[in-house]
Length: 175
Image (tube, helix red, strand yellow):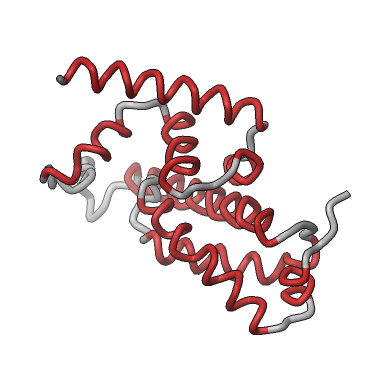
């Protein structure tokens, strides 16, 4: 069984300094990760804030190190993001003001040179894209990625391998 490290143990006791340390370690990575996920009309910052609130409410049931905390927190955020996306889909199906059709606003159409990575990642299946973002962009290890995405460590390794192979192939085709 994993035991809590000092930071997590202090956070469980309500120590604000421990929560600040956890926040500094994970908040910006969480928002970056959420910006790459569909979440309906809710912003990445709103979902991240909700994830931190849920984590504060449920931290007593968490056991592990501050690095394990990242996977747990990202898992909470993933579930909140999926819920937000489902709510948005349900809202789109409800006619507004008697209008039977509602256009999907879709993602913003900015395609500047810096967007090439996003466009390339968008070609990947969702699981592979999420794994690549966690591992390569957010520099999460395999166990934290597995916890965040609620999949096994083996599934993380397989998806990561397949995604990188697919990205290498796609990059070779564009050259």
